Amino acid sequence: MPIDAARFFPQAAGTLPRADRSVRLLVAAGISTYGDWLTVVALGVLLFDLTHRPEAPALYILARFAPRVFGPTLGGSLADRFGPSRVAGWSALGLCALTAAIVVLANTGTIWAILVAVACAGFLGSVAQPGYSACIPRVTPPPRLLRVNALYSGLIESSVLVAPVIGALVLPFVQPQVLVAADAASFGVAGLVVLSLRVRPADAVSSRTHDRSSAVATVARDPMLRALAASFFCSAAAITALQAVLVVAAVERFGQATDVGWLYAAVGAGGVAGSVVLLRWTPRTIRARGIALGFLVEVMPLGLFALVGGLPAALGLLFLSTAAAALYQTRGQTALQQRVPAALLGRVNGVMRLLLYTGMLAGAIAAVALVEPLGWTALVMGAAAVSLVAFVPATIPYRRRSRRPDEVTLAGTPMVLVSDQTATASRASFSIGKPTELPHSLHDPS
Image (cartoon, rainbow, N blue to C red; front, side, top):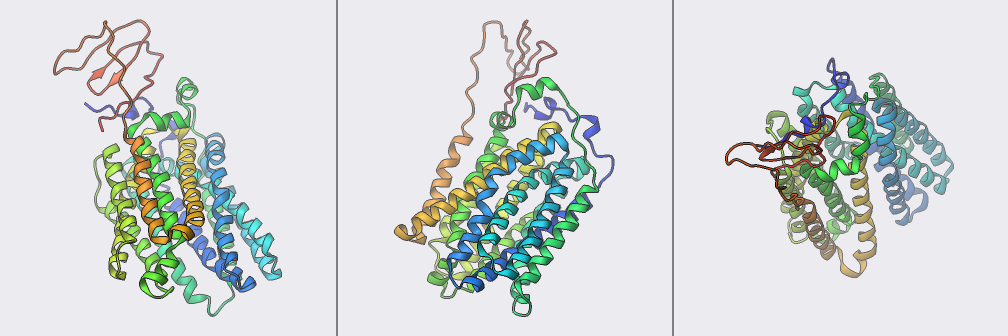
């Protein structure tokens, strides 16, 4: 019989949502995400126009992503201590101020200052993300949790599909600073909306549990969470390596650089499709095997992308990859919110985001270092293969402890262990020990 981790980490009554306030959170996330992608397009165009050198947009991407590896851990700790909505809201207001400063700096043409502001904004954005994730189960009734996560994922994926198109249509008629100013306004609105949720810090569920369970240990000892965390790092590395050479691939394989827009559209469309499926289909549970299967379906098409010759096939592979990612990562994020104690949720989300951003940074560095000697085809195939190999250790279960002489197991029935100082749990056992102690090892049959 599977053991539900929620039994060992019960949610405090005060942390359960009294009413559904998820609409406000989704509105805030959607507004800020769409505005953020407008800035990605606008600043890339702006920096190239100011310098007329291809290094400027590349430095912008590096300044945008590199500082993000330092923010999630801090953001998760702050969210648990001061409340997730407070951290996410004030971070969004800080992003509003930084983005407005970029508008001023763009008018003066100060390139280095723009890049510094972008780096600060990237760091602050990574601080906010664990707060957003930790807010979802606190403002959503349990029956709607998967649906709200699917809507949240769909908003993010649709922004990749829609916002760049909006930017491409608008930029011929307005200056890039206008879109950056719109992004600043979106962050301001999002910050005020999230602060209005007033999600306070979770009350301590059990000081013993939190004393013994760090965020990293919570992820490492749960097979599903461990697989999900590994998938975040490995898939982010493979995807970022491909993203770094996507324009080169469009030119060499499909004939023109403008085809990169269709490739990004396929990425966004796949993510939206996967999120929509979860709105109509509610899987009962997800285990480590389900995470591993979804990861394979996500990463393998990325490697095949380097081999196909036609644009329709390439679009189909990218669509399939992001659709699979939306399905298993959204379901995995929902399971994370269900089984991690509320007082630890921000820090666990911080660990997940840290692995995601570290994978993105690793993929970007690999692309910069290897694309010239290897070529983009070998780079993409190699990144996918290395990601698959690196994921394998996360699927290896922990070794079970050997049975002690005083344990008695009856075939077909749960095992009952009565001893003075121990408390254990496994798939076929239920143990009794000191009532003040909780098991250190959670077993998932997957």
